[in-house]
Image (cartoon, rainbow over all chains, first blue to last red):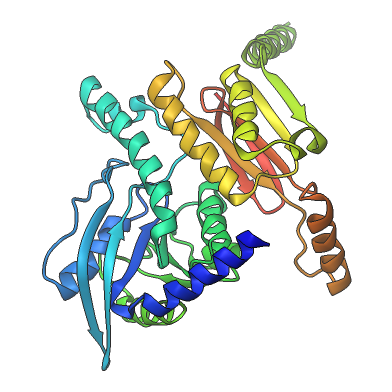
Length: 212
Length: 148
């Protein structure tokens, strides 16, 4: 009972003192889904700078990357938030997979070690988010347990979610499959790399911020 | 004569393949954990129990499913182990649940009520070492385990 009262009062206090321009929006998802590509696209559109490096080798982002005060002004509306790009969450890391991408053994081992720590960091940051954009690769099976675990954790913490199905420019992309996998959430199909359907994405981002 | 030798060759091939298959699945160990065994454990104990079995190269079939925060904790602890245990690459994890889409309100209510009352024991969770399970392909109705 005491616990419920404590949580209730904490939520009330948080909602009173949280200013809308102090929003923390996180980018979560499996590795190589295009979280940093999307974060870069938004940053380039509105701040003129990148947030991080992208690569075809999985686990390129191995530390949480933060961009303060990203301000979006779109169709007369304005939204300022702290952008938090997180390392991709996975249940397994094998350094040998990095060797296939041309990395040397020592570099692959180092990358694997950093990637495991990045995953732990990502999970620990979940609690601090006000809203989360879950970025999925629309060419991959959306029913993977990692996706379900991420969304399940956000729901359990009552954090509003927007699902982004990235890489829709690719032939194998299947937006309908992603929509069917997550029927209770807003799903937007985009290509962060090509900048496709970003208008709908920004509309959904404003809608997401209203749910906080 | 030619036909006979061909069928003989086929027989030999089948035997070879069978031998190979038997060799590959030799040593595979499954452990089924009943819901009642996990029900009384706390989050740390549950995760520890699962990871101890997985480290012993066992595939765990759990009656029921872990809570969202337990799944996150399982991934966190797995990553810490990948860092410290030699040759441990992580886990494969999948959950299959009854599909209640298109079911009547009464069935959904009954399911939700039972879940609240005795916990979620209608699901099945498969967790195994990544060195043994290459991939678990999941769609809403089935799980397919691809072994290494």
